[in-house]
Each structure stands twice: as structure tokens, then as C-alpha cells.
Length: 428
Image (cartoon, rainbow, N blue to C red; front, side):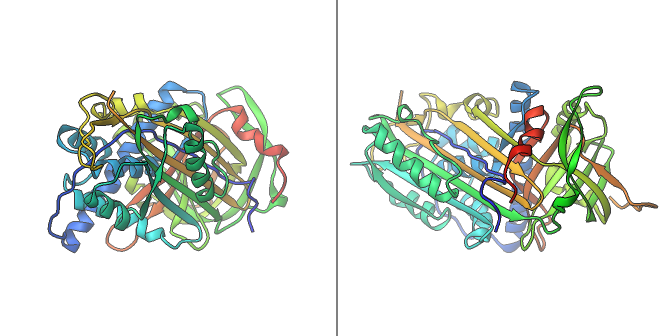
């Protein structure tokens, strides 16, 4: 059994104010679904990178950890009810493969249903609605059947108790890793609805790092400065590739009994993370595995952890979702009430820790709704030494005809705290 503390925790909360409308369409053909899922994976990767670019520019020397899929899913639930230009903005910014509500719901459902009963990755959605208000039937049906989200009535005017109720639900869905996600003053008598997404992941490496092989080694913060950190060591077969377009080396480490893996993108230069961030703008991260070949690799990887907090309003506005935060927001069919609604605030909090046995991660996203105001070969065993700042993602790997991936978590290891914090933690 994996220790709770020695793993990856990721938390995420989104406060938004949203409404919606529902339309019915014919079911897509299998071919259309494959095309839509492939496009969604590609656009999701672009969305994740754009978010990362905003975060990296804001805090270039800070360790980043967030859940692109959690953000997309929560805002995606809101999109199901959006109309007009608000819906169009969300479609473009989220990278949705269609502007049809049924198709959008199916796109998220195809991922959610994969992990509905998974013991490794759990995804949960929830709707909290102001007492005395009711959700429109069509919206509720989609939320229930496609997003597996039930609705509870709550009194947001009693902000302390309302926040506590929501936070307790989040804790219960994230193995108690995410606490106090919503502060009491985030909701009030004007709040009409809160949409929440929570993700918890707990996985063992398929090939675990021997604890006896972990020893202190150098981690370079730049070309000159380094710190001594606990470095894990392993020689095993992994997906490995050198990608010239990124000027980086890539390693894929699978998790046991799942289709999930951690992908580590290591710049070839010790100070290459900023350059990698720029190169990722024009690189399709969703099909990066086609550059990899399975081969024996000598891996050196630091034990690390990182925490990250950010208010996402500016990031989402920069990505083209400004209208939902404004008085022009169009969410007219989420509730039976005719009150106009808008997004109030979007915040994100995350934590990750990685060690010899595996990874644990959790994320939560909440939407608060208020009334308006390549092929290669190696002659010798390659070495992958993650001894300087790198980017990583925990991803879902699709199978069958849809050879694409979706980032569930994405982060960077750049600073001193991230790589030395594991030293004083209890062993698993």
C-alpha cells in the first residue's frame, strides 16, 4: 500500500458563474467519434501548454503543478449550458471539437467513463445549487448521464457552512489531500451555483526505483549552481526519445496496471526550460509518444514535491474566455430562474510528490455561479539524467484507433524546494 504523504497530491478549484442551454442532435458515427477524440486530445494539449505558458511567465522560477483536464472538465460542464458568443468563446478556448452540446458532452464522457470504476484514477463532478433554485431538466440530464454529476441544494448565504460542505465533499473525493479549497467569502447570497470537479490519482510505478539505489547527487539550478538532492536510480526498459524540435530528451514511465504514465521532458541544456516552453507552442504534445522507442535506459530521477497556487481569471481571459466573467455572459438555461449569471472567480491550488514507489495526485475544480454583477536505434544503453529543470505530465494514453494522449496533470521542477523537500519525509 502506498503511503498517503509520500506521493503526488494536486488540488484545483475553479470559481465561475455560468448558465446554459441544451440542444439535441443525432449520434455521431464511430468514425466521427474517433476524429473528434483525436482533435480533442490535440486541442487539449494546446490548452494545457497555453495555460503553462501563462503560469511560467507569471512565475518563471516557481515550480508549477496543475490539472489541465480538471480545468477543462469543470468549465466544460459550464459550457454545456452556455449560449451565444459565450458558448463560442468557450468552444474555441477549450479546444472543443464541436459546438454541439451532445457532442461536447460525449467528448468528456469518453474519458470519464474509462475511469468510472478505476481503483487508480478517480474523477468526480458535483453541482451545488442555491436553495430555492432548480436546475433546468436538460442541463441536469447531461450533467448526470455524461459527467456523472449529481446536484445538492445548499444555502450560500450561510457562507461558512456552504464552504465547509463543499470542502468536505472535495476532501472525500481526494483522499483528504485537498482541504479548504473554498474560502467562506468566495460564496454569498448572490451565489447561485458551484460546479466542482475533483481528481485523485494514486499509482505505483510499473518498474519501481530500488530505495537502496537512491543517493544524494547534484541537481543543477542553472549552468553553475547546484544542490545535493536524493536522486533515484534505475536501469529498465522505457519509452525514450531525443526530439530535435524541442531540443530535449523524453522519457515515459508507465504506472502499474493502468494506461497512465508519467512523461518527463528534459531540456538538453541545463537552462533550457524557458526555451522548451516556447518550442511547445508549436509542438503537438498529444502525439509525442510517436517519437519514442522502447529501450533499456539508465534513469536518474530526483524525488520531488511541489505546491502551486494561482488565480486563473487572467489566464482564462488571455486564452479567450473573457465574456463569461463579464456582464455580457450568457448562461441563461442552466437554472430555471431568469436571473442573468456570470463567472466570479477561478482559482487553482496543487501539490505533487514523487518517490521510489510511485505517485499520488489529486485535483479539484469548482465553478461558482452568481447573479450578475520517430524511429531510432542505440548502439549503447542511453542515459536519462534528470539533474536540471524539467517538465513532466501525468497522462491518459488512449488505445485502439485513437492513438492520442490527454494530460491529467502537468508541472515543472525548477527550484531548490521542489527537489530537496522529500529528504525529510518518512519512507513508504
